Length: 245
Image 1 (cartoon, rainbow, N blue to C red):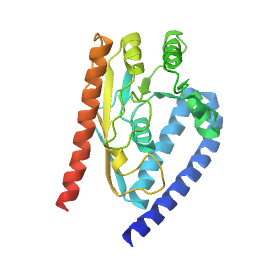
Image 2: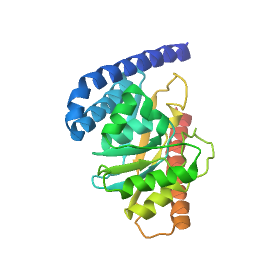
Image 3: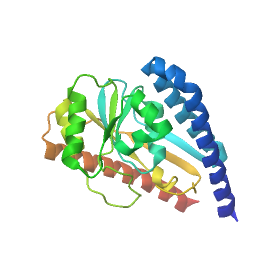
Image 4: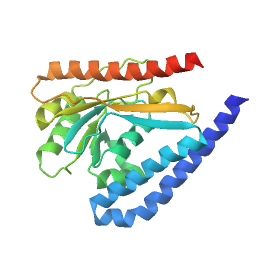
């Protein structure tokens, strides 16, 4: 019975979230065309609305740990669901993503992704994707801010093993900036697919940055170790908490 109630709450949450996305995007479009800063405000407003509505409709609270970057920095994050995207965007002043090129053709997401300077790449064509990313940061026209990449290249369910791709290391080397790893446990509550969401507290953690100067292999190894350990620790906290109930 509790499962059915939570599933209904999850359905209501999903419907109102996409309705809110449409309304906010529609009314925010005119000012977003005027200035990029306004596009960031609209996107951040939507993200904060989602976390607020999730807390009382489905009982899913969110927690941010660590210090989000305020200046230019590469962010490499664990990606388990749409929620980690929302949480990162809600706390970074000028986020832009390395994202699937197919998303740029979506009416709402594509419009705002272009306005805030996201970089589209074609999945499955590694060499071409890396060239696209590097050319975008080399041409001098990229919007300044926090460049966010998911180094595994896709959403990964808790417990699944997916290798870290070389794209994050190539960007780290090219940018010459610190790279901030981000761990999360959001997939335990908000999955990769489906409507059902679980109550609880979803957490992302901004971890100490990896400073520039490492070679690609060393950087990628350290990045994977840091993100995986951080994410596993956050997920273990949830499992321990649930066992004590």
